[in-house]
Length: 332
Ligand code: C2O
Image (cartoon, rainbow, N blue to C red; front, side, top):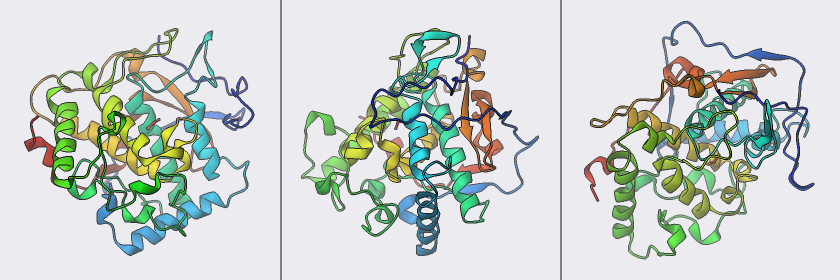
């Protein structure tokens, strides 16, 4: 049986400080895809390659989101709370009151975060009257993208977060092995080490659907611990390396860089499907395809969306800017 939508009226925040229950509504509609992809697809750009105009636009949209009344579903903290709410055991699984609902650590990881970004992006576009707006992606899988993109480093910007590690500001570069305490005093070697991790989690260690997307998590299953290769490594390390807000499920989406980080994770799913060798297609198990979640959309409507609605980014109207893939030629 697929994971069903949570009952939003039964929310159990685990502490008073972290009450991240999703705003409820009795009116829920089903998400509808168009019959075919739109003629012009929106292109999500690499964060380190965008121009000033884009940065101003994105920062302005986020600022508007941050200035909405607190109990508005589009408010930035409410948006962040949705991420907190789908982990940390805030909701039980529908029909399984003893089982908590968790979107990390299983085959739900990629599709759930794709949904989450989709609605966040559409709401930002709505706030600035630009329905073609796209989120950027943090191109941390390329040498040029391995530091915090500059748009996130301006302390006066809505895209800044002052809880990040102070010593990980540019020109410091990402360390995919952050947890094991290695330091990156040799830039060239660190970049190569990162690219080798990418090769392993995308190519040599991700030859089956389960290795990459993560394993099954069905209604009635206990918290899943079958995360895919990208979720376990690059994903988690970059959360921790970025630091404080970004380092826990409860607060990570309070840092705007979360969305660029996950946009690149989402891009990895797209790239992986196109790689040669092995069995690299998404699941066709209906327990995966029919797993369903609730989100507030850009029309201020609570919608129910299923995994099958998000398997193709083109149907959602977007693709990713094409940039060189350096890790493809960096075997371990
Ligand atoms: Cu939902 Cu990057 O975690």
